Image 1 (cartoon, rainbow, N blue to C red):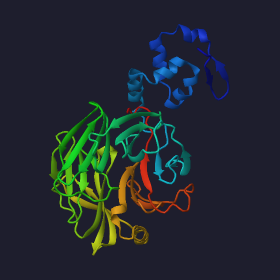
Image 2 (cartoon, rainbow, N blue to C red):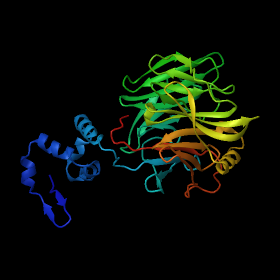
Image 3 (tube, one colour):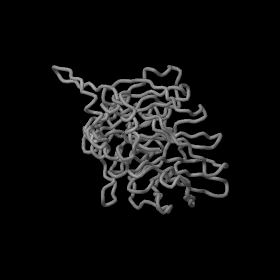
Image 4 (tube, rainbow, N blue to C red):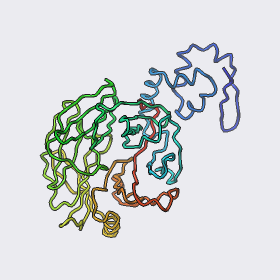
Length: 372
């Protein structure tokens, strides 16, 4: 074991390696549990034993429990931009530093896989030619390949959900004769098959389901309604809460990994023209209550961006913000729940100017302990 140097504001002290060599392993582990995660990562080259501890289930569990009490994350959170014209690079916007950076994933997967969803520090990629899925933790460079439940998969919707106990993949597949729902459970490493919903769900391939209190919520095309799929029982049900009137488009988003609140982003107007864009919150009594309206100057820009093609609009939650994105526009419209304010995230400076469509955004909050 190499010497370990500790740093203070005034002196540098080298610890006697004989002290470390005589300490029982459980005492060393207890000392390491007291260190911040960043320090642990820096210690990996120092000793093989330190490096192996980071992959020990018991150590990971103990350190995760002790660090969960801290209100601040040891890592930055990012808004990740994926674009087909830059398949080997991912653009990251650091929410804390308000700066951009670029990464090149080194995971062993081919360019046939495309990024389709993110949740809880994990990403889900899909290869339509296989067909198969890849769930990966980009932070620790671990991944799991998941074969499709059927080779004749006609994928219409994919929702990726992480929970404290693992993750689920929900696939909605439609054929000319039937609709089918498939649910993958990471704990069982297996698929379950259920009956699909009779009505046609939102025809936007960019709008995924929203996880909230054990179910995945979807919106239907006009006349707009909300339906819920129970991940455990596989049952479908229509949501009884009456939607606001004169909606031109709707999109759902939930906070706190689906255990907090459910929000509705929608346009209000007639003949498909949004005269207003509003945000509603679902109360405990099952009523949609208006939270805020988008300022008029921002509404005009958003409507001009979408060209009234609202099937290109999708929303997601990111670190206290509701992000409203358009597949045809490189900027993000976001609402800070705590500050109660709207703002735009400008275009990524690393994107080629010729990129005019296919902008896909994701929330990326790195988690060392997010297991695939």
